[in-house]
Image 1 (cartoon, rainbow, N blue to C red):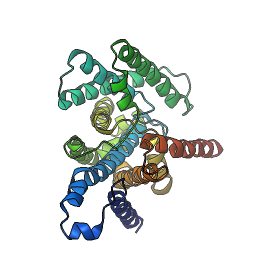
Image 2: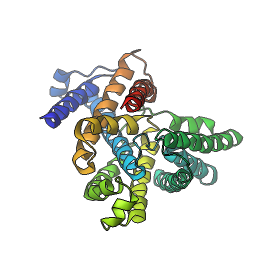
Image 3: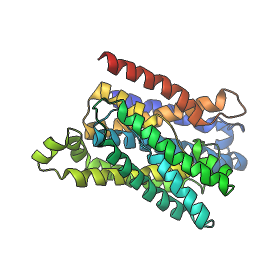
Length: 315
């Protein structure tokens, strides 16, 4: 019942997202076959709505997987240096292959995101404490170092304006022909679903996973690869969306528990729902202008994140 309610809420917000914008869309005009109305619908509104659904679901699922791989509820691609490493990879491609295709940039983002996350995991093993707050703090510091390196070279080679386009998630420029790579996240989602049982076992700890016959290092490596690929796709297409991979899996786990396979679809739907709500809010708060959705997600997400921290402290 709850799942059907989430589907219904997402459907309503998707319909609302399609009809909200600087240019009014009229249902009657669409039914009458108005060419300009249909052009707006097919060129910008539907691509934007679809990209919101895919990006929200992808980042939430990536956060869910990373939290199980690290046994830490506050780790996600944005708090483990994954997105910052991917951004560095994009910068290097822009420096040495300025005319590279989007596919090449995406591949570079994947490679750097993968190795950046591996470095983060290697550093996490050096932590002398099991306090769950220290691991995401380490990830944020590591990500800031990587991001600072990328920003330095961007200033040196006058690419800072191009870099800033990946610093803030923004769906206002999404249009037909510029977002289709996000569809590659759908097969990644199905692969994660197939291996969800293994991610659940890995999330219980290395000793238990090995005793149950799971190849712990291989599954962890495979999971990081999936997260890096999905994060790179989202970064290339729409930019960085903070907190989404942290708060959505935590809220879902509070209600439904910690089983990956059972929570996967609900986590994806809730991520899409939350991002869609923030994007609609970004469009109407100072209409006809827009606030970057990363700012709206950052404000609401930080408040929810603080609540989760306080709740965990009192638990």
